[in-house]
Image (cartoon, rainbow, N blue to C red; front, side, top):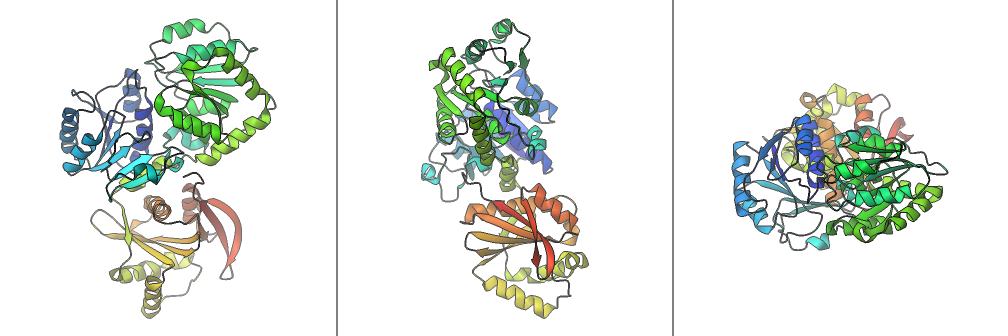
Length: 493
C-alpha cells in the first residue's frame, strides 16, 4: 500500500498529480493499492483518479504545514501504508523529517531542488540537468533516481512504445496545450498566433479547471480549430499532430516519448530548466517565458518549424531517444517489497534446486544434468569472481524466489535470470528483471546489458522484449542459436 501526497489547483496546475497518477498506475500493475491524500484538488482531477480505481482522502490542514504532515501520517497509519510519496513545492525539509521520524519509507519527487537537506529514502528528479552534485546535502542512505530514465508517463501511453512517426514535408496539424489550468491564459495568445497563419488544423487542449474556458471557446471561430476539455486521448492527439506548442512541464516528457516536435513556453519558474535543456538538446524550440513572448513571434516560429521537415525529424528522433516511457515501472521497482540482495553461501542449495529443475535445463544452453559437486565448484567460483555479480530475489518474508547473475566485462554486462518453479507465471519475472536492471545501472558504471535466449524459450523472449530490451540478430552460443537482446543505459540519465 502506498500513500501519495500531492495537490492540484488552478494556481499550481495538475502536473504533480498527473505524474503521480502514472506512478499509481504502475503500482496497480504490480498488484498494489494506492490512496491519494489531497489538500487541494479539482473536480476533473478527482474524476480521473476515481476512474482509475484510486481512493481519495481530503486533508483539512493547509498544504505543507506541520499540521499537514501529522494529518498525512495519521492517514498513512490507518491505511497501513508502506511508502509515502510526496510531490509538490509546498513540502519542505520539516515535512520530510516528520515522515521519516514516524518510521515511514519516503519517496520525495523533487524537480526543483527546493528541499535540502534531504533525508528521504528515495529522491526522484527526472530532469535532464539533474545530477548528484545538486544533492550533495543529503543523508548517506538517501538514494537518487535522476534523469529522464525516470520520467513517469501514464498508462495510456504504453501502447505507443513501438509506434513510428511519419514526418511530412510540410506540417499542417498543430496541438496546443498549456497544462491543466493555465492561470495566465497563454492559450489565448497561442490561438492568436495560429490565426495569423493560413488555415491549419489545430486542436487545443484545456483542463476543466481552466478559469478562462468560456473566453477561449469564444475564440474558436473556424472549423479547422477544435477545443477539447479534459482530453482522455492525449497520446492519440500527440500522434496526430505534426507539431505542438506547449508548456515545459509534464507534457514535455510525453512529447519526447511520441517524438512530437514543438515549441516550448515557460509557464512557471520551475519549467525554465526543462525548457532550456530541451532547446539546447534540439528536442524543441524554447521561446522562454510565455508572458514575454508575443503572438507574432510564436506565429513566425511555428511557420518556420512547420516548413522544415529536417528540423522536425531531428527534434522527433532526439526526443524519442530521451524518453522510453518506462520510468514509472522503474520507480516502482524501488518501492516493491521485492528485495534483491547479494547472494550468500547459504543460497547455494536453492540455486542448485532451481538449476536442476527440468524446465530450467530445457531452456539452458547447457542441457546436461548438474551434479552437486559441479554446482558447488561453479557457485564458489562465481562468488569469488570480482567480475560476477549475483543477486538473490526475496519476498517480504525473506523467502528466496529467484536469482539474477551478471558477468561484467568493462562497460558491458551479460545477464542471466531464473525463478524458482513455485514463482513462475505470475509476472514476478518482469518485476525481478526490472529491479535487477535498475540496481545494476544505479550501482555501477555499466553502460549496456546483454542477454541470450533460446528461440524456443517463449516466456523469456516475451520477458526481455517487455522490459525494453532491443532484439538483435541471433548468435551462436555454445554451438546453439541464441536470440541476442541488449538494453542500453539512457544516454542522458
